[in-house]
Length: 166
Image (tube, rainbow, N blue to C red; front, top):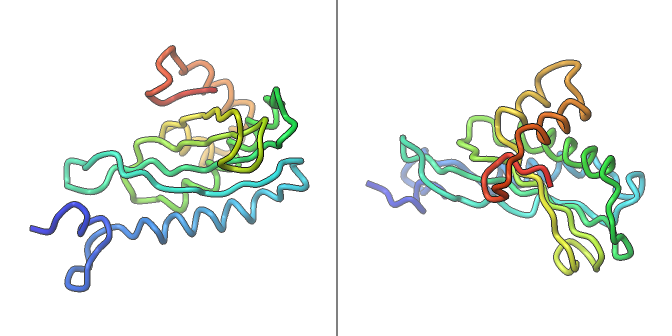
């Protein structure tokens, strides 16, 4: 039986396994098409990784795709409306790229009060359940305001279990 790593990365002999790098690249390209940093007034955005956090019942990888936005070096208190708009754009970029993959949640991170995606003083996040993400992507008429309200309603005190609203 192939190891978890072999199943995740695939190998030359088996056509099984999920190419997570391909999925990450697809999501990153989609995010770049959806979000122009200048038009949103932010410094940068990227899909920065896919964490494999567990193995599912059929030995498939359980993943957390991660998108990150740098809101700016001089931002001390982010505009929450902008944060929710960006979180929705990230979800819309991530969900189609990870269709058919066992996703625990989608992690959308926001850095600010520092320089760049990884050098900021502050990093806050939203953790979006697959159900809410799918609803945002697929349900016509269910937009950013509905997404925000559902995330805030479902958020509890545990910032380690999705949904996490901020």
